[in-house]
Length: 157
Image (cartoon, rainbow, N blue to C red):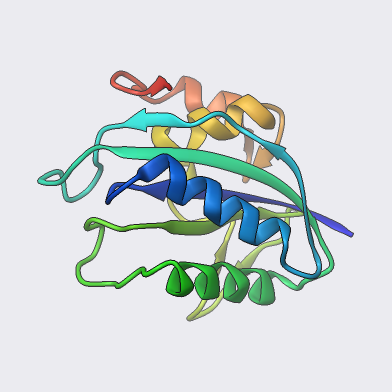
């Protein structure tokens, strides 16, 4: 089993129910065992800010899946839950991102690990810091990366 970390977000419909359903489906996926789950955090939109607020969470998993297979499992769950990709950084019923996979570095057309923006996004780091503050993301820990960012507007619900 390999340790990996996932970020989840939703800003359409019943956000908490959608995140809970995504977590349940991930936990039911062969080769994935959820080992820790952050609380849910209400966060302002990022990138495209003309949209509703988000609910974000983080998961720690143990997996037998490869990084790409873990990504595909998340994408399949997004599709099954009704995710339609209409605009970059736009509204989404569910988003599941692979943030880190046992310290692996991957960079190809489908996947970049660690996630290319993880250290720039407080809405990802706040829930991740709850479950893995000492996780190394590149040259620094989650807690160190978070300390450099403005986390105002992010609140646990």
